[in-house]
Length: 197
Image (tube, rainbow, N blue to C red):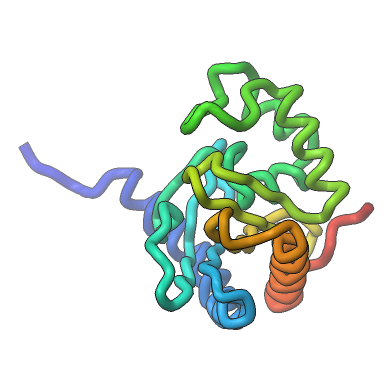
């Protein structure tokens, strides 16, 4: 009839110690990004089929988002998750999403099968950034780009989230360029490198 800390406590503690250096290096990059674009930004890491948000830099006067620190969301629905999944090997993505039951539905949109996800990830690789529009929160959209480690593997993603009715197509393109530059800066800060083409 005694209680003690179990394996979950170890997992949480070790996850924190692994992510804290990355989060510390990301905060100034995200702060500059938010200052430049006027929208909230965040850093996420892949955790199984979900993304885990480890930093949120909220823009002044902007509403709170679902992407608060510690929140997990389905990777295939988020721009952050798509940016990370796009740089994983095909067998890894297939192992994460083996069948239709692996695909979470939040608002009736987004990929429902592996073939749909593969097509989506192909366009992410082609464009160099990921996006989602209302798939996480109706009325909001996000753009994201992957941060890579020393071996060129995706280790995190930088994203900006904005109200869809405030941002036209040209501004979205500019946001995508700025997010991609921020992700590249963070890749350099962690001594990472871009993946081989």
